[in-house]
Image (cartoon, rainbow over all chains, first blue to last red; front, side, top):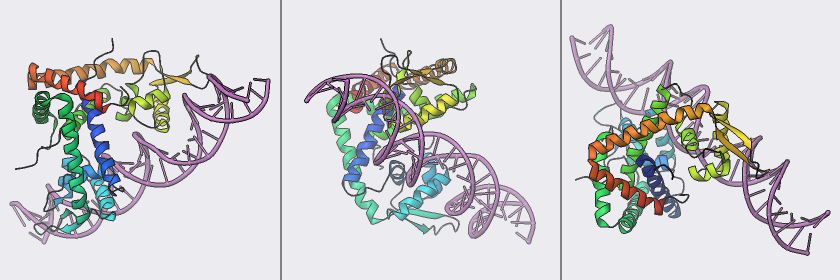
Length: 144
Length: 144
DNA sequence: CACTATAGTTCGATTGTGGGACTATGAGAA
DNA sequence: TTCTCATAGTCCCACAATCGAACTATAGTG
């Protein structure tokens, strides 16, 4: 009998499948120049814009990496950098209308996945899953 | 009120935290030249060795990528390539004693994480989590 | 003012990734 | 047998992601 796969690996498998589906949905809708890492960073942007270092923290990447990702997102027209009025050193990364057009598609695909999972597991087990994952965040997410 | 994070993102957060801990444990034990992608590939190797294309399927990467990863693992002394007696085209990727020395450490850290999660969630919720994740694998893992 | 901390960028190197083309071997059909 | 096609793996090449280190500009503090 094979060894039980660790929970973390099972999570990895499921989360990768979901990420791939969301990215495919975006690509199919014409947003075909965005990558997984870029979309992950973009999901951290607040409506009024967010500093790059905050985005880096949220995505748990170095700020040099965030700079590179924002460079590409900016070149592709998804975000723009505007001065931060409250601090001359900082700039706010803000979504453009292009990103705001893509966002509902990503959310819709997320919701679709969530619904499929609920249908597969049944409502009760799915609720347990969400409870467990939310609780785990306390001890696995340093930047919640 | 903030939007609920999708389950898949919560899974991503937790699985990344676990992967990082396992990798750190290996590094601390002197296996400091292995990377996450490499260890992920290595976990797919059967005791008697596994073909490269099978490893690529299991890790869901292209076989060129698997070739590159095996090259590095081989150079670092974790795996070796031996001819496949049943097919002259194929070769079997096999763990060396170095990899077999690292494996229990990785498993121990996995078990430790699993135990901590269980302690944090309580046994009942943890069981529900495992049930849900195992069931989800049916619809998210193309190579189970 | 001087000193230190912070926000962001640039440079350079490495890893991971896959498309395309290629070689060698196996398998099956004529 | 020979021809044809499929498969296993590799090589070449380009690009994305990543981060350490060093740097510039601005802020804050005594």
